[in-house]
Image 1: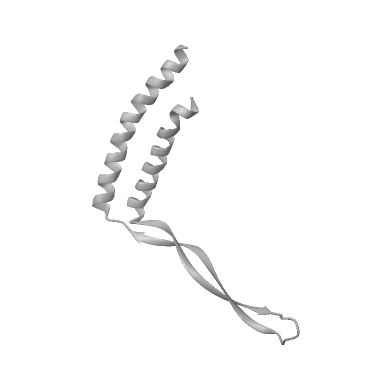
Image 2: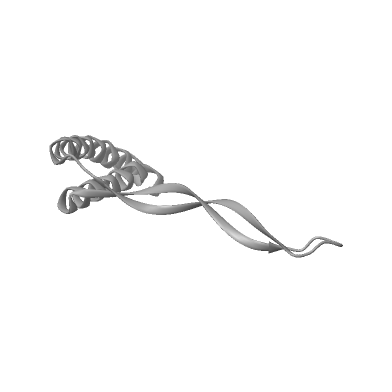
Length: 98
C-alpha cells in the first residue's frame, strides 16, 4: 500500500515546496563553490611548507522565483495530484479487495 501511495507523497512534497517558494518569494537552492584552504605540509628532509588544498563546498543560496510561473506550476501540480489521488485510491481499493 505504501508503494501505491509513493507518487502521492512525492507530489505533496513538491506542492509544499512550491507553496513555500511563493510565500517567501525565493527558493533555496544548493550551490557548489571551490574553497581554498591553507595547511602545513611536512616533507622529509625539508623545512615545513605551507600548501593549499582546493575542496568543493556546498552552500545554500536564495534564488528569486517568478511568482506567476511558480503559481502556474503549483496549479499544474495540484491538478496532477488530483489525477494521481484517483488512481491511487483505485489501486488501494483493488489491494483491499484481494
